[in-house]
Length: 261
Image (tube, rainbow, N blue to C red; front, side, top):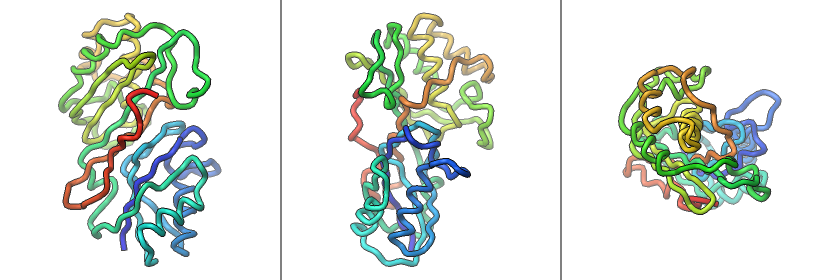
């Protein structure tokens, strides 16, 4: 039997999603909890791996099991064995050909920036902070040059293992809500650090250090060394995943995270 799960987590205390030797990861915690419920070792596969410090509102994973449990038992049983920073939202039996990563047709992220003179205390691990004023309107105009299918090498981490840099951005929006500036982006898939590198470039434009046209120039350069900083992981949220309707999964894109905190 193959089971899909929706998961949310606070990534602050983890070294990312993927299992790594001698460090705390979300995958390890989820697999340990599910193994307790299944009474056998469980291996999970996720829709999109997240880096250290990155959060998820609606991560999707799947696993195979010989154990017969109800959806309620998988959800509540796993949550009883998970740390408070990780929660299973739902569980659903899926067809054998479903794959959390390869069946996905789109993924979405949101990047949150606290833009005020003083750093925040309550949300220090959950937003990026920029003390200098940001102009959201030029950032929004610059972001539109990334729409469509492009070579995103200028926004790709040096260690990215993707087979090619071509990605299709379907939607990208920048907006200000009081003291927060938000970036929301949906694409068929993402390169390593792609959203954080886009956010880093937009920050330079928002501060007035670069012209709006710089984003288009950077995209066409296909050279990461020409780009800006990699924005910190604390502001990044894996917002959700889209799948074909025939899988009949519960809502896989979170509406619980506000456009600003």
